[in-house]
Image (cartoon, rainbow, N blue to C red):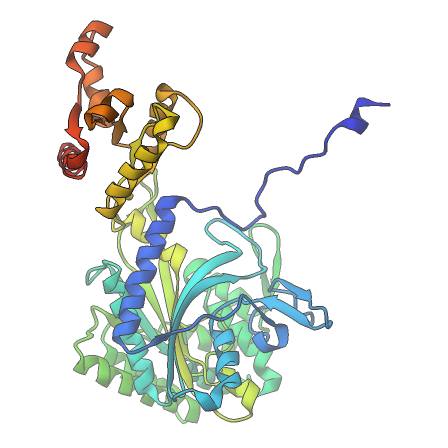
Length: 499
């Protein structure tokens, strides 16, 4: 029998393309960012909600690029009753299903917030993952642009709560109705028959900052081949329509009032377009009254949002700060969040108009940008480690750890294998600053030795031999077990000062 037949076939350790493992520091940064956003949402009177990761595919709807199959653009499977189920691609579509299912029991407007993973079965790339975390707030049953103005202010407040100052971010606002007016004038009907073409136009404009005017013009026309060779079919607008759409995207000014004047003239007799201008005027009135000036919010006609369910005002929260990569090269982060009015989502289920508006941001992208800007707090203090000299003293070691934890000091007992030397090597890898050592003799005397590993390593560089090491016993102190909390706090405080 050949040796190969007896060989154990082991799976290769690898993660799927487009998915990522996250370090402790990144997870803590993301958790802090979500907590900051939740504090803003709570202050605005929103309530938390959690929906499942899976929804029926028809309930999610076809708002991502896809063909006739429901599992293109999403991760989908057949349930045991042969219905298509799909992982949610955002948190808004599941919210619409929840509201429709519980409509009579919910107050209107229903104001909810949520954070969680979403999944998109799309081509992964640098910084583009198939799973990412979103953090949302939505107001369902809220008609009128006043609710949209509130969402814009909420978005600005989340940016500030994340630690950004004026000048480091901008919220850019537009209205889908304005683009509807331009497209209608260009021969694209505002009907179900023209829905796919309109969606292609929206997605083309949404790539303006990445592809530039020429790239967007190609996507508005016949189509475009990207650097990898993949071809994207275009919206098939004629030359005059392409010119009108691109002209609309550059119609804004840093002064909101000037932008409104330009748009009012540009919309002409379009009913949809003039309705969009009126909504922006109301939003401007509210923003101005609440001191959200052009340093925080501007009107920008290049903002359209790529998802197909928006029906009115839309906006994006953008980072303006100077950000560099590890090699010192400038990095443009751009939009980290956005939202807008989505009146049709709940209506899909109920056959009646249910107005809604919301805001969402990508947690990982935002947290990564904040980290590059130096706005993420340093890593948590490494735990104090209690070394194990004698396994018969394990109860005493865990009692010490319990004392420290009760005083809000992170602490762990070494539960692996190895002598004290190996334990200290483990502590070094963990970044542990203080180690507590206690053998049977110290136990009898009611004492412990607390060793500053970081300071000790520095002092050891100047020690020439073992005799000097034994005599100097650098960077450690003896403390009574009854005083251990105070002694550890003192040494940690000294260590922070030396850092």
